[in-house]
Amino acid sequence: MAGGDPGRWLRARGSKSQSRVSFVELFLDLVFVFSISQLSHALGDHFTPLGALEAGMLIFAVWWVWIFTAWVTSWLDPDRMPVRIMLFVLMFAGLVVSASIPDAFAEKAIFFAGAYVFMQVGRSLFTIYALKDVSPANYRNFIRITCWLILSGLFWIGGAVMEGETRVVLWLAALSIDYVAPAFGFPVPGLGKSTAANLDVSGAHLAERCALFIIICLGEAILQAGKIFAEQPLSPLIVTVFITVFVGTVAMWWIYFQFGHERTAHRIEQDETPGSLARQAFTYAHIPILAGIILSVVGNGFLFSHPHDQADMHAGAAILGGPAMFVVGNLWFKGATRGRPPLSHLVGLAGLGLLLLALSQIDVYQLGILSTAVLVVVAIWEFASLTRAVPLARPPGSH
Image 1: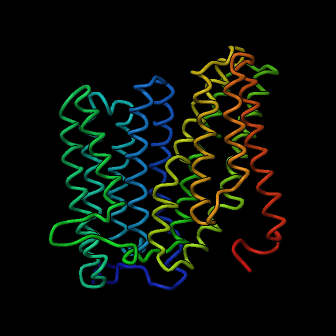
Image 2: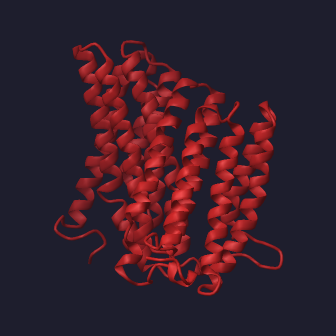
Image 3: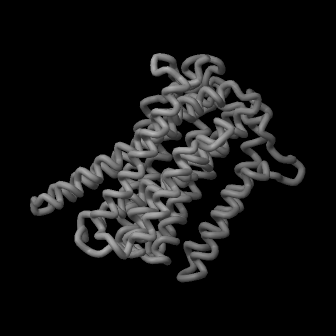
């Protein structure tokens, strides 16, 4: 368990331990429970176009620092003491990021940006050192990655010391750099660019990491609903809303987990260029899944606080927008690995779209019931269609 040669900090390739998620990784994820809670509260408290933009930017940032760490721990072994200590340091910095979220566009901007840049650049420098003499291709990859993270970091820090619209513009530029760079292979003069063939990653590990993160997000939705329900005066309507929120969250779980991540893990493990597929299915496609869950938590707040109000675009943006984004993310996620988008998800999006036309005719709680019904239909449809194709007794991806 001691430090020793950095080459020994890597996971054993081709072994079961390569895909196993360690306890320290789960411990790190606890910080992101706080992040998800902070993001949902920040969006709910400032549910305006500007508030949505700011919350969206923070969601992109939180996801990016988490998914980059998940990729790194696909190569580095968290059971090695130096790697474990690195993750504990990231955990503390992540706590600073999470605590700063409510005031990230105010007086705590420098704490948010500073901790974010420290996590991104520090983790990559550590990985460069660990890979130096044992994986030349990935060593060069992380030199390129670090160069781009330092570039975006200048915009993050620059935005933090500015105010108002200038901060928003600089942070949007930073996010653009962060998100565009992987698509172009992190090109650096003199070092070339990375290719999909270089990204030899464990699909099973990334699938489990992302699945556990989605569990955290869905768990936060359940906890928030239980907390609000406990504080509400008991009435048949509030009980109905509580059941609606619970069923909707279970339907989201079913849509993602029943035929999602396990099939994707198997598909990536068999792919000739697993890095390219993993980047699309996990790095990018999970962003709307995460955003959809967070927005659904905001929609649940509307259901509890204004159940008898007439539905309008303000409430509809959260109550319908959350499930819609979640389904879009799953559509992308599953379509990337199956080769074709699931019809049930397309029909679900059409159903949520049609509910927009009924906003002026129904109350908020009725809109919640109908949007939950759409999610349930999507889950049942996919379950019925794929169960006929693949018997339940056989694992996903088996022949």
